[in-house]
Length: 151
Image 1: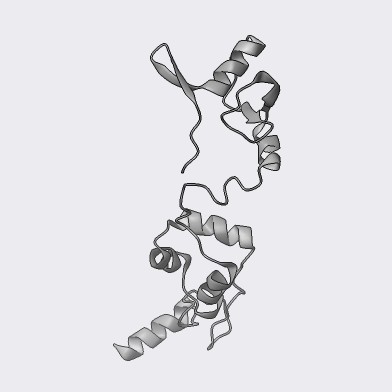
Image 2: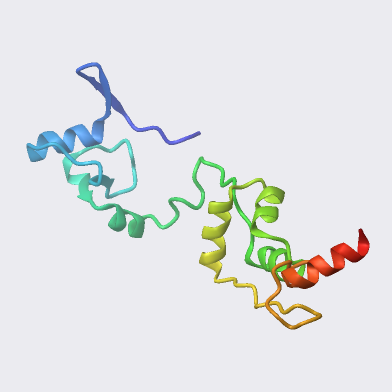
């Protein structure tokens, strides 16, 4: 059964009871960065002695499991090994990997930076210049020569 906080209707707005009680106790409105933590872990125990105002970072330290096993499914995930295999071994572009994994390029770039994966500079197999066409391992000049030979 999912967690559900007790709520209260005030001025045609539904508010969480524990937040409202803390605001009444303190005599001021809480900001969006203020979280009300239930000290004993029981979200239905709204006694003032059981409530405390904490920052988001402190709340995360009190509950490290938040964000790992939430009711929201993590839809964009690629492991370090899989990204390394696709990006370095198979030489797929970030664009191609993003399309394959059904995620946006910026999301994949953030994950790539988080993992610290960088493709080593690939040299052209013919002239040893930096390769612009990674899969073909050719620089622009050599790639064009190959293309003209084929066509």
